Image (cartoon, rainbow, N blue to C red; front, side):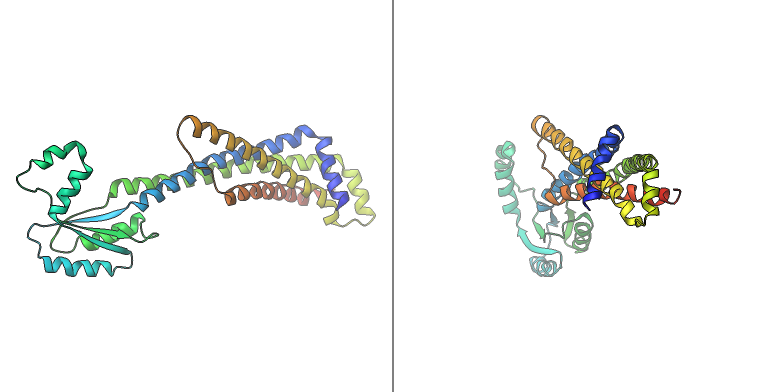
Length: 285
């Protein structure tokens, strides 16, 4: 193992430009992934904050039978997605409007007739506030004959989830494309290193060195290249994150497990590219 580590480090001294290019390509690919990762994470956090405030409001007809409404409340509370159901009378709705809509308080105070309907507010359990679950509960509530309208912000809820899916797909596609380019560069660097040492490798094979012994320095070289690229990408991503967060809008930094996963991805990318190149070209020596 000492020999493998020494030879892997020596490869960086023999061809620093090529090693640097390999690390830079990995850094660029992971930097792109990191940027989209920050966007995707913040979108997910935004969706979670939106979800925490998601509720379904069923506005009732003026002639709704109180007994039927009370029975429906118990039925809705039995839905597996529902945490709590609140009945809001017309008087309570008017009082809430006066409290929340300060700019219209004088108008609402001078009304002779209360124009606001009674309603049933439905709160959902965490994990049951996705667009599909909310829509399904709203559709079931809308089937009650005394329900005039059901509101849950369908349009903006769908748009937020669509935006999160687009960000995730863009991260995978662009990151994957840059990763392929980086793998090709690493493979080229390893092949050049093998050709430069082909006589030494041939002698090692003649005296009985196993294939794994010959491959190990190149795999370590790919591992180090990938790790260096990952660290550079992490630093660049964090720098841009601080710049945007301090000047444009507040962002949240990605969690530790995402960072560890990015570094591991860089190392895996380097090892995989090196392994492919070594297996292919050792057969030609």
